[in-house]
Image (cartoon, rainbow, N blue to C red; front, side):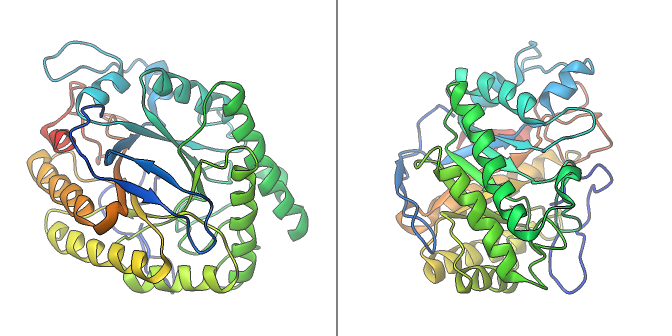
Length: 353
């Protein structure tokens, strides 16, 4: 799904491409990450990853928003999510956002809070000053005049710098996305996949190397939206593989509605299994969301999707992340999972399973 305030319930298509956009320890799924087309190492975890992107958190708190557990007691949001069964957070990072939110310093502040509570960390590099998604992949303003060779170097050096800043603050991310919902590549026009897949592959590899130069254990994700769309994923990863790109995990988004969630979940499972068999790469749902006004159906959707992910053989379905569940009465975004009083809806009970 595209993370823009104006996108609420629909699926957005870009021309010519199908796009869109816990510490309970109860699960015993063993996940072994062996790397993508060019293995980047291996890591084993004994729990299914259940998480949330909470990148709006500090901005919401500064705006006066408070969060309450199901009993109505005010608590830290990350603690509430942990108590709901989540064991990881995802945080976006923008290069030079005009208002400062989600820059490196803001991202690190949130990562430190999550790490202190024992949560695993995913960093989502947008490689932009603003939202990057299937409909737009705008270069950071400071990068616009760079040659392609210099752009590759910048992607590597910037990625390495952010990773080093995290390391300095005692944080080694478990995962790093090189690009966000890159259905048609990133850093347009140089890295637009539909016109120059080879360039996009080089940018992915530059980001991959920037991560690995700091942390060989951090698993690198290439993230594409519309997890139900197998043809899109085959086109993208066939192209990346043919051009020598490196990745460890294939990431997906899934944003269904009440009328199609069962179909989307089934198609997504088929796609996940195909990605694993076709590329030898584990998969992860990096973003999911559903209408906050239909929490009961949202819980059914999430429970089914989590169970389908757990069913994937050899633990190659790594986990599921909800996108910005804490959003309530915020930026006109209607796909959170908190009610208008700041308490989690029953949708998040799915993560206790």
